[in-house]
Length: 383
Ligand SMILES: NC(=O)c1ccc[n+]([C@@H]2O[C@H](COP(=O)([O-])OP(=O)(O)OC[C@H]3O[C@@H](n4cnc5c(N)ncnc54)[C@H](OP(=O)(O)O)[C@@H]3O)[C@@H](O)[C@H]2O)c1
Image (cartoon, rainbow, N blue to C red):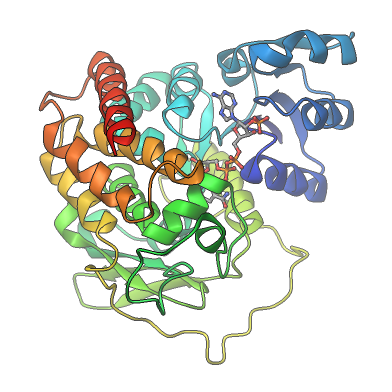
């Protein structure tokens, strides 16, 4: 197995490299951002054909790795020959390399949910043009995929995503005094900063609802969310005969990472859409199921970001792009102390209500993203 990783120095990237160590996979390409020390360390250990880093550290990386091809563009990593490209650059920045990989015929194991949220139908078009597979890496979408193995989409009645509920699922009732430290304390998962804040507001779940909508080309009205405080049931599928399948696993991203990469390969070689990718002897503890399987309804009043995401999906076109951009600005402003916690959904709601109503195209994604960021920054500055 030969993999390339877009976002190798991040949470998903480093865990993917751990899986590569377990399995002895070769790494053809690594795309990092600004983390020079870790990028160099990874390059020395895995000896990829190409490493990309951000401009700011390009010269330093070249100096540290004189015998390696070091470039400034993740697109070059995306198209380097390999079996599976792991899409784990967060935000809209992950869309262009994902598109490039798919168009070049590379199978993509996709963690970057924003690519599907912002460009879903176009991302599928790129995959079909390139003859490439997309398999989900997000734990919920991996869970749905695992429930769908051996099934027909025509038999599916409902996709049910689960949410841990984040650090505020049991209170306080009033979230106006939430600080950055409080929001960064996720009860079950260790993840990057942006996705951790998104988990606390349930915007992460909202983005995942949109991701599921586009990934499985399934109606929004038939996608729902339940809180699963134990984070062991990762999602469920209800079929038209009213039977339900659920997928359970430890809250450890290395499991869906490994599954996603393996099923991309299995799917590409067998031609089947839903096909499992398992390996025995994964070095993780067994699950403790007792007392950890509770399911609850979502408190939609306290977590309005979830309904904002549904609203964007119903608006269609580029509305999810505006939602995503406003959320990125809102989360960054909150982390920098320039916006309150409750200011996050308020900001997103305003930007979404003013966003241009235009059809989805690559050009409109870029222009809407720029417009929404500018508008969101104006609102932050005025607040
Ligand atoms: N973490 C999870 O458990 C999890 C679970 C499900 C889905 N996801 C999704 O997976 C994606 C990655 O999440 P993460 O938690 O791994 O993020 P993260 O820890 O913040 O890591 C981001 C990675 O992307 C690189 N990067 C950021 N911006 C870049 C740019 N413009 N060009 C090139 N490289 C860039 C970073 O480089 P430097 O650090 O070197 O700057 C780093 O390697 C997100 O879309 C997230 O929603 C994450």
